[in-house]
Picture (cartoon, rainbow, N blue to C red):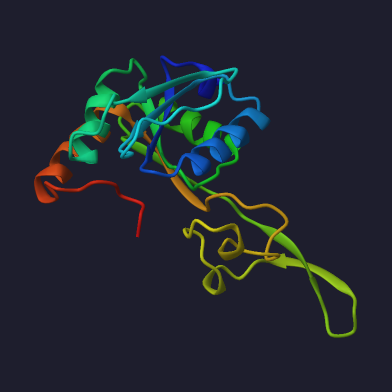
Length: 192
């Protein structure tokens, strides 16, 4: 699988003061037999430790210096990976979908990113008690909140982030650096 080749792909995870979310995300990757590279860009107030894994986990930087966009760019520059998935600490992904997006991107040399999405089917109960299969109602639920009860409680049988993009590393680095100019004091992106 391409996602397990660190020269082709790395997951880049931004976090601040939420080690429990990172541990849960790492457990999800382990459960899906991920063997690639995870870069954790950690803006936490204190040095965090993460569990040993069967895949390569790197933490950058050793001590937050002030702008997570710049530090994400610097962390990505330390990688050899051709493509990255920018992954928030409280999000989950089905890696087979990420693999498909990565395969499409590598097969399209002029493309900068490949977007992916998940389609959820769920069994709904009719008034008469019978079941039918249909799509969930995305507008009624929050897909980005961190607490499990806010995350589609009983809406779907499985949760994962609905939309994601696998991006070529260099354009992603350039985007992070440009964004840092507009948000010079940005600490972390996904804390609101």
